Length: 210
Length: 221
Image (cartoon, rainbow over the protein chains, first blue to last red):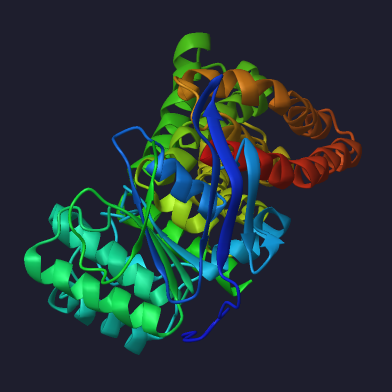
C-alpha cells in the first residue's frame, strides 16, 4: 500500500439517516440526520455526555447504531466494515501510542503508508522528527497527541473523524492542525470533529446534540 | 498478508521490549514443575511415571498467564480501535494475536519442557512424543486462549474468569497429550492419541478466529 493521495475519493460523501443510539433503555440520541459532502467539515457540539464521541464511533463503524442508517456514497457502511475502515482515519480520546516502541516504530501499523520518506514527512509536519528514535513513553501528552495526528496523515483516508483533536496541543501545533485540515478539505476530504475549544478549521457546519 | 505480517512484527517487537510477560510464564513453568519432586519425593520411578502429567499441567497453567493482557493493553490505550480500522479483517487480527501468543509463550514452553522433563526423570525415549504433543497442545491453547481473551475483553475481573473459560476447553488436549506419552512408556504406539490431538487442534483453528472476531466486534461497540 503506497501513499494514497486520492484513495477512495468520495462522490456523495457521508450521510446519517434517522440515526439513534441507546445504552440499555436510555436513548443517548435518536432521529439524527445529516450529510457531509466532499470538502466539508462538520463540527459536532454538545454538553458532556451528549453522545459526541459515540456518534464518531458509530460513523467509524466501531459501534453499531440502535436505529437508523449510515451511508457512504449511498451504500450502508455495515455492508463492508473492513473497507469502511480503510477509507477513514479515526482520532479518538486515546492516542493508541505504544510506550515500548520508538516514535517512528509507532507508525509501523497495518493500514498506514509504509514508505520511510512518508513517515518522516508526517513526523516533520508535527515537529516530532527530532524524537523519531526516542521511546514513545518519553513523550509528553501533547507530543503523543501529535504522534496520533501524524498517523492520521499516513492513513491517506478521505474521511477524518476527530474526537477533540486539539486536546493537549500548544498554539503552534493547533495552527499546524488547522493547515493540515484545510489541505485535506482542499483535496476533497471530509472531516467530522467534536470540540469544546475553538479549532482553526475554517468555515464549518455545526451539528448540535441536545 | 502484508498487513498481517506488519501487525505480527509490531506485537513481537513490543513483547521483546517488555519481555516480562514471556519471562513470567516461563519462570512459572519451571518453578511449578520443580515443586513436584519436593512434594512427592525424589524416587525416579514415581516421578518418571508422573512427569508427563506434571509437564502438561504446568504448561497449561503457564500459557494462561499472558492471556489477560493480550487484547486488554490494546483496548486500554486505544490501539485496538486503530487496528480494527486498518482494513485487516478482525479474524486476521485474532489470527495475528494467536501467532504472537504461541511464539512468545507456547514455543518457549516447548523448549524449556525438554530439560524440565528429563529433570523429572521422564524416560528419554518418551521425550520426543511429549514434545510433539506439546507443540500441538500449546498451539491449541493459543487458539482457545486468544478466543477467550477476546470474549472476556471488557468484562470486569476477566483474569479471574480466564481459567474457568479456557481450562475446560483444554481438557481434551490434556487427555490426548498425556495419553500419547503414557502409550510410549507402556511400549505402545502413540499415533492414535497424537492424531486425536491434531483433530482437536484443527477444530480449534476452525472455531477460534471467527468466535474471537465476533467477540472483538462486541467489545469495540
